Every structure is written in structure tokens, then in C-alpha cells.
Length: 276
Image (cartoon, rainbow, N blue to C red):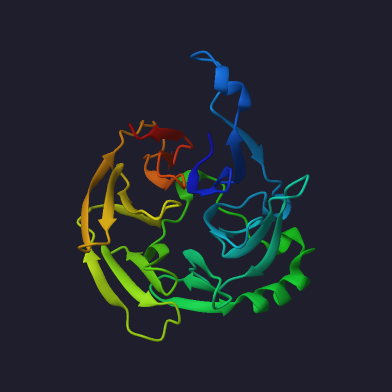
């Protein structure tokens, strides 16, 4: 029932982030033998937000097997340790203004930041040093998100940020519908990879099975083909309507084996689709 802005499949769990909500989902064992209309397929566990109680989270990056980074709409970067008995989010630092997306460069030990229209990098060590000052930060220093979902600021510029072609290239999706590619060191000039051919773009993702998918607000999903650098039709989903908010497809991911597709929308609905 909360707005879902980002969804990732990580190890044996699914992590969603959105308006005043970060949740860890695992298979509901009771659902294995459930009858239609009984318990749900997934069982969710809330991350304790503490000083982030009034934040809107819209990006997640995998830092390690058991740690994730989460970005808020007020440019606060938080750390979540998935092994804790009571999972909480800790403030690391405030990133530069208009940071839209984050990506971990494990080889270079950097975090790539996608701001409105430029990419920058910041050392992970620098972030951790800054974090030592911020773990017990006064909640008043973390700006709240607007009180009403209808007042949330729409992001522009870079809408998606993913590593492709191994570990040395980054692809990013611009609101102009172009897909650009650049080296991880950010020292060369970005080049156009391909025109997305989709209107009302809302995201680009390299999924857990390495497929690269693009999607529109309306639920049109297309796939990028490595072999000939083309984009092909993949899947369309019909989204439910709401009387107060315009719905949109905000996030998706594939399971590592490529058998299960999971989608999340602005209204907080999550769907599973299986290949047949």
C-alpha cells in the first residue's frame, strides 16, 4: 500500500524502497500449500527507519552480500545491514544535490552518482569516514519528504544507471529517451548506445539474470539485445488505476535464473510473473 520506487532481487530476498518504507520480502512458507485467496506468496519485514521516518526512498545499490545502500529524495545516503536482528537504516552522508541514482563500482571502490545530467564518483572510503560522524545524527538534520504523495518532486535527467558489458562500462538512461554508455572511470566522453524507442520512459535496469530491461510509466517493457545493440518487445502489464494518484510502473527485476519477473508500481502493488 506504500509507493514503490525501487525493487531489487538480492540473494534469497526481494528488497523494496519507497515512500516512508523499506521492506525485506521472503517467500512465505505457508503459501507453498496455500489455497486460493489465503496467505500471500511473500512475507515482508519492515526496516526500522528511525531518523528517516519521513523520507521517500527511490534507489537501492548492493554494497556487499549483506549490506545495501539506500538513497532518499533529500539526497541522504543510508546503509542497511541485512544480518541484524532488528534491521535499521543508518545515515552515512548527504550526497550532492539532485542525485538521482547510485551505483557501486566494486573494482574501483567508488560509488557512482548520477546527478541531474552528469555522472560523478566518490570513494567508498570517503563515505565510510564521513559516516563515522553521522551514525548518531540528530533526526532534525535529515530533511523530511513532502507530507503528501501528490507533492513529491518528479526526477529529471538520469532515470536509470547500470553496469553493462562486464565490469568496465556504465549505461545510463536520460529523460530525453537516449541510452548513453561510458567507462567506469568517467574519463571518456559518453556515447549514445541506442534510442530507447519508448515514450514516457521511467527506468533502465540490468536485472539479476543480466538481462537489460527498459520500461515506461504505462507498463510497456522492452529488452536490450547485446548481440546487435537493438531493443525488442518484451512484456506489457496493465496497471490498476487510482482516484487520487496517476499510477506508473516504477521498478522491476528478474530472478537470477531468469524464470521469475517481479514488478512494482507507484501504488505499492507487487506482481510475480513466471516464464512458461
